[in-house]
Length: 254
Length: 254
Image (cartoon, rainbow over all chains, first blue to last red; front, side, top):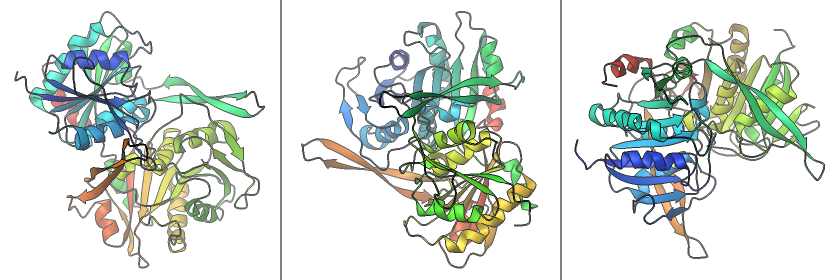
């Protein structure tokens, strides 16, 4: 494998997160690293971009053994735009996002800053992968999954990805990983509940909370794979067109 | 048409925007309105949700002739979650989002707070439509498109929508609308440029700017329809799985 691969590393948990450190350590075995990550946690930011405000960029010399590390005041998607159009001299050969502290399987993909950063790189035509570990702990054990991260990233570098396709990779929280499954996104959702409280000034406010519910029993889903000890890989796309619905809508009286 | 439809109205330009006023006026002819919209502009917020901070809700009595109008301190997606799970006693029969001041065609759908609010309602199982007018002016002329908004919303109430499908409706900026086209999302993208400046304290900062580029000449796209005087309707989905790529990935050595 040639050693000149240019690799963009980003995430949504912020540049100081253990997950991006683990991802950087793996990718340094494969190529030259540029890190551009949010300067603060940006979980749940989805595909948000900063258009009504300004962005700041900070260089972090000798950060995780690279001189090309930057934090950005914006969202994960801003970080990718900033990396590609302002920082890197060449378009990277691959973008890796994560490793997220927590699951981005099933519907979580749509709320995820980690995955939206990966998708943004995909929109830019860069082969791109988002990695997430189904463990929300800050000190989660990333060591066990590092060989799989390297294997998957290497395969993407060797084979490329179909046009418009990004990989959503989730790791189960287990010491006994059984293997890798290519999956579809499970039809599983959040049942929201708002936790209503009163602040010290007597004013009501809310915390968004919720319960994750999976009614999709398909054994070809990411949720099934993860629940059964497998790494799930869901190929996702940013062409949101529901092609199957076009004919149906054409029958309407519009 | 029965008059008891419960209708949720939201947007991303904020509760004070002329676009949501126009949309509310149309929908009041069809049913009972609940407005839950951001308390400030939230353009480009994508599918962001507020999980690391709290949310506030404000009631606006007799706002646009309804007593059920609320502004929320969060994102457009937060507004929909708040509306469905905290404010409305029944699940609405339809959610309409907009009318956005500006285009949400092609790749813009993924950055759009307007469309993400509509998608969130779709995730909740509510028939849902996002409306956008390709005119960024605050005083854009919404009158001309009102009959089409009513027609499309009425068809959705009468026919429902296929499971997991949301409508992305864009109106061309023209006084001579030729009709409605059911379309696919054009493969058109932004070429970003960052406008680098120096603040009064001598520190660098950036504005995200860009140029919209459409290399997709397909006459079945939303961009073609809009450029040719038609209203575009793209059925979109939140199952992001790239099904066509699953077989390809299964041939890899993973």
